[in-house]
Image (cartoon, rainbow, N blue to C red; front, side):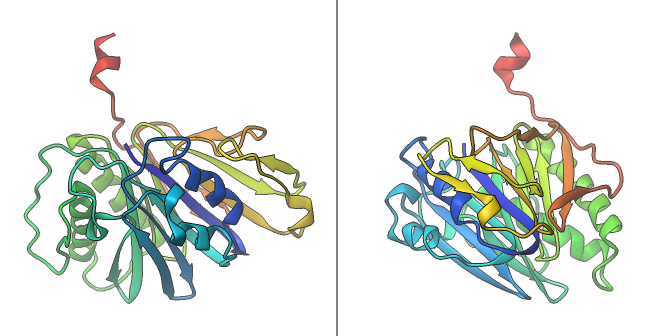
Length: 272
């Protein structure tokens, strides 16, 4: 399966430290060697880097790791292919425009028999179940709100409903952002941490790298990092409840209505 990384914060921040650990999981400390990608929101624009080779061997990933791009919302993905060949068009995250904003999406899991009829504006370019699900989500939002972007609470409710619907076809962990906030859906496995004052040191699990955030931050800074599994070994990460959708705004999870969706239960676990 794939792995996800997201960042949401209250002031533009770089993700170099977290990405250094995440990059290693793409073929070095883990098996996710079928491509990687990352998207940085900058104002209303998005800077996207994609590469179908393993992130641990990618010169583009090395560039990103040492290039301190400051952003309020970031989504990254490393791929272990289940559907679709290893190629650029099947590399996450995917990007589409809706209501005059770019939306970015990345998925971890596998959807079986998910072939919705897409009649509208959004069509997949590649062959993955992930891109089909993203197009279906975008098309559903466009149909549900034809007059423009709704309130954040209304948007959250519909995304939650779609997550539960699509989740009936399999494992549907995903990150989604339009640059103003970050949606994180946990079907089976997803964690997060909020870093805020008083800041401290953090050490990566996948690389022997330590950073002292006291030297890099101001007291008002707040950063939420979301990852499939914890990236550091000396901080307290919060597991997200399987079958729930979280909304992150200004570096913290916020209440936006009922969060319940559909949890994914592996067959071997169910058999026990």
